[in-house]
Length: 455
Image (cartoon, rainbow, N blue to C red):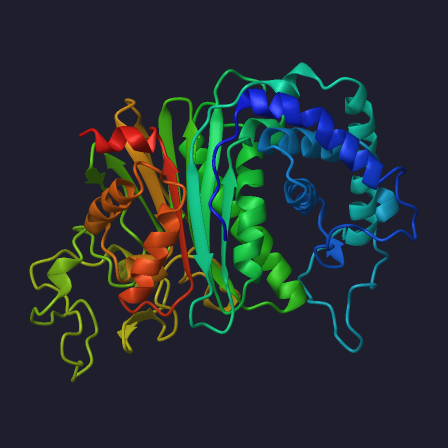
């Protein structure tokens, strides 16, 4: 996956009329009911709560594939989706029983739920988008031309030796434009989701976590709390979808929201984000693993006598991590056991003998032991920060956070300060060290990469 450079506000102003002209040339009229949609419809039905996120994802993805500047793509998508949401969506309602499979009885406790026709919504959204482009061809609103904070973002993702690519990532510099936020606080959102048991949960989280965050009333005053609630609500929504569609996948995830001069992060599972400031790694989080200690140290698990509070097999493989006799009880183990679950060692520490992560979106058959409650942290930015790095465990299992700064600095030195392809080199480094998992790495530069070499 290619890395991305920041757009220039002047460049966007020049590209906007040309983009709109080309769009209307390729689509001279709205689509008819029998017309072929230029995008893939997300399933057959959507719940009312899913509509905004799914249609925004369709519109932004389509516009971006046509090389629309990010701020323009977000603004056009917002205008089209918000117009549609203000209409009566009852015409898209699926009739009762249309989505139930033959011979299957409805769950006894299932409450009546409205489901909407996804294809009909997608068609209507495209035609709303066509209307907006037609109007904006004459005059683009000032809000859509507003200058954006420019950051270089390098991202690279590979399937590696795995059969399927189950990672997803989000790079949303135009967060405010996509959700119609008009306050003076600039916001940008970045996320990595690492799926397991299928890609459904990771894709769902990549569409809905930021949409749910934008809907939280506390976003302007307590952004970290809004992110925590967004993860929780996305988990609830996906679990309902998973039960209805018989999905068993789950996903870890980590996101970063830069709101003004404050960095807010939220995470579930073992995907991680680190901050590098003046060449030094600033640790802001501890990943959720069954063996995570309340003292926060991972190293104290190695080569120590077993203790009574963690069930250790009689014969562990050589070098397998063991609990430190002097540590406090595991925060995750304590939570899991209080719910009636257990933590055991089967090539690594696992919840109920299955998952190697203790928190995730989805995993319907492991709830509530695998929790959907995210942890959050915030940090004021001083301007001396170098970059953020978000990555899945396919990277961090073989590259420690402490090594990241030197690897990035070496790349910048070889490339005369160009950070455009740094994520690609970090992924290659993880593969050379033996990672066989899906790997996704995203580097968000908070300063000009050339300035990082001066120190």
